[in-house]
Length: 268
Ligand code: DGL
Image (cartoon, rainbow, N blue to C red; front, side, top):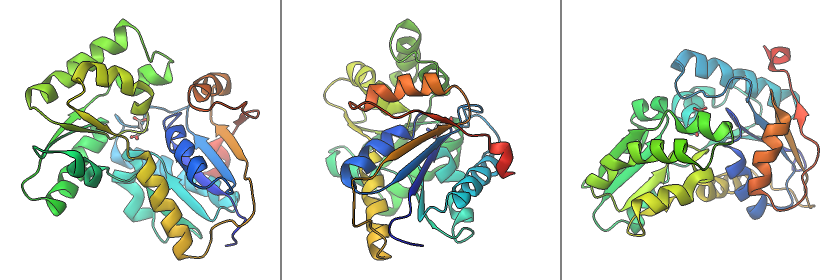
């Protein structure tokens, strides 16, 4: 591995771009290759075996790109496949931070809400993380299966997503959570909608920043931080590159390069 090699970042679709934004801000000198599996999104309602299989295909793509690190910018793949994938590839691997430590820091009541995909909720990951830090904490997980398809479909505002958000958040409001972890990297695209429903007394936690900090700390530990820059970002998707680019433009102010179509079948 060498310092000037790229960092691979991936998700089931456009969600992981919210992590790329933080990585870019924190490590402007790094080369980044993003991959979003827009041909097969959403992952969160698939079986664990299928999710793990897809994750390994993507990791083989990154092995071919000779990355020094891959950032799993997807809570679902982090919860289901990260531990098993560690040490199997010739590069470092880091997953999405749970955000639980930050949530506990801002919470007075220690009632923490977590919204995520069905697979992430079923893993129980956030509840376990909270108990390990603060035994008195209560985590209220809520699966939100309608969110990813709507966000991928560019429906980040309007009646449909608003109704879905009310449906999912009503129980968290009733539970009086005062911090809410966005446990899916797609959800920061609709954070203002979520805030409007929950009100200012609930602090939203987007773990993207901590994830970027974890990635930087791991690179620093292995003396693999790039020394020269600025680095470029390549944006690769398995389908719908025009749609992906329109959504990416919501997050990044500067003009983006051409998006690339990648066929994962080449990495079976
Ligand atoms: N962004 C992914 C996550 O963080 C969404 C997974 C999906 O495609 O359902 O879990």
